[in-house]
Structure formats: C-alpha cells, structure tokens
Amino acid sequence: MIDLRSDTVTRPTPGMRQAMADALVGDDVYEEDPAVNELEAYCARLTGKEAALFVTSGTQGNQVAVLTHMRQGEEIIMDDRAHVFLYEGGATAALAGVQSRTLPSEKGQIAIDDIAAAVRMSDVHFPDTGLIWLENTHNKSGGSVLSPDYMAKVADLAKEHQIPVHMDGARLFNASVATGIPVSEIAKHTTTVQFCLSKGLGAPVGSILAGDRAFIERARKWRKRLGGGLRQAGVLAAPALLALKNGFNFIETDHDHAKQLARAVSELDGFYIENTVETNMVLVNTKETGKTSEDWVAEMKRQGVLAVPYGPYTIRLTTHRDLDQTAIKDAISGITKARHQLKG
Image (cartoon, rainbow, N blue to C red; front, side, top):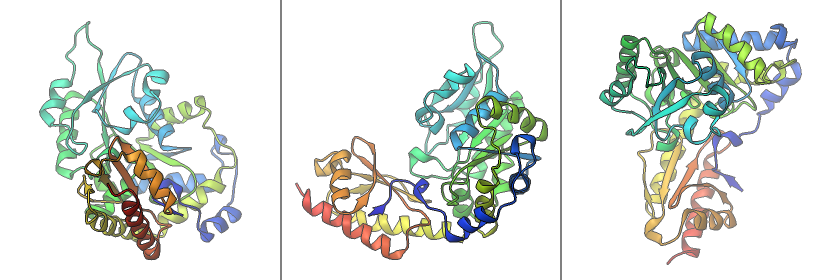
C-alpha cells in the first residue's frame, strides 16, 4: 500500500531507532534531560531565536504560543483557511478564550492592506488585536510557500502596531528547501515560530516552539498546564536531533516526487491539478469525472494507494521520505487503474 495521506505517516529509520536506544535521558520537567536540552539549544540556533521548547505536537506548540502571547478576549488575525482555524478543534477559543479574525488570502497570504484594516483601534467595543498569524508552508493551499517579501511586510506592519507575529511552520523545512532560504532567515520575520519534527523531517514525535528567552520560560509553564511536561523525553528528542543534523536533501526529493505525481495525474482524463506544486503536496480536482473525492479515495485504496479527501471534489496527495522512486511509480500506476475503473 502506497501511503500518500500525509507526511506524518513516516516511520523511524534504523538510525533513529538506534538513537532512541542510546539516548542519554533525564527528567525534562526538571530540565535535566540531556538530549532534550541539546535539541532545544540546537533548534534555537537553527531558527535564530534565543530559546526553544520541545512540545508533543504542532497543535500543542501552536496553542502554547497563543496562550503565552495573548489574554482572554483578544483577537488573532489569520487567514480563513489556516490550520489553526480549521483543524485544531477550536482550541484557541476553548483554551485561550480568544477569537479568530479570519480574512481571505491568496495561497495563505492576506493582502497587507486587509491586515492593516483588521487591526482594531482602541475602543471599548472591540477586542484588542493580540497576534498576527502566518502559516508556512500553507497546508490548505497545497503546500505553498510564503514569500520573504510578504513576510517582511507583515513584520513591518506588526512592529508599527506593536503586535507579535507567530508562524505555524509545521512544514518550515519544506519552505526552506523550496526557496533555498535558511530557516533562520524565514523565521526572522516572526516573533515566535513552531515547526514539526514528525512531518517532512521524519522523526516519530514532537514539535518545537521557538522565541525569545522570556517567552519560552512562560511557554514552559503553559506546556506543563496542558499536560505536556515529559519525563525521560530524550528517547523522543534523539531521533529528532538525528533528522536535523543529517541535513534535508531528502526533502528536495519529496518535492521532486510531488511534481512527478502532478505531471502524471494531470494527464489522466477528467483530473486537473489545482495548485502550483511548490513543495510536497498535490491537490487533484475530480469534478469533471462526475465522482466525488470520497469516491476516488475509496477506489484508489482498492488499487493500493492511500490519499485523503480535501474537499467535495479535491484529493490531497502528500509525498514524504518513506517513498522512493519505485513507490511513486506504483502510486501513479494505482491512480491510473483507479481512473480506468471509475471512468464515466
């Protein structure tokens, strides 16, 4: 079975499993786990921030960021297809008591004038704008990359209004590889950044939240409040360190595989590719076939390919480090067989 559902499905490499077995560990709540401490210090340097915090997931990292940045009753400016708005269970409202000001965007980029207009004036009737939210790469747009120029303009606007900027960089390394821009150069336009260790990097568990030292100390308490204080967490930090230190050449291969998939699928009758494939995602529109995405996902599974419905007539295919060239060819073959089976 070729699994194109997500880059979260990767399995630890033999080297990662060995690193887990060999990890020096301690109690991370006491900040005594050597591997976690090394991972956090490494990620702080990597992002150009003063400090970093290991958290269990991207959602936890994002929510800790909201809780640390904001007060109840404040408002976040974000795009209307942001992961934090669509896929995190309403946690910003449920946990932090803040509301989302969602604005339309183009590939995750809200027009700068629209952001400026959404910043609340000081008025007793309005919530205060407490945070501006960016997502890079942008999941719902098929892994599109925010341009450095755009991020710089958002940063300038935020500085003018003294509003922090958080970046959900779940797939930040995909953005870095696609553009050739170091992670620290991308992150410099933000106050804080979260990135996942368990997506493109292929580690089994965890994410990183990075920012200035005072922010991370406050965030550490919020992580504890959310039940995220771990004990001998070095067994999770060690494979993440290995993934980071071994470089990211495999991510470029993931991107090449996605482009190969897009070219092949676009040649099948009734399919077209909705997104410009910049990283590791392909959005396939099925409307002209007369079948829904659910129909196609079910048939593709019967042909040995796993994918996810991403809208009534949209399928998402996501490449990752567990897929080699043979797997990509097999995936193309399976999708082609599915097309013949459901040909209308």
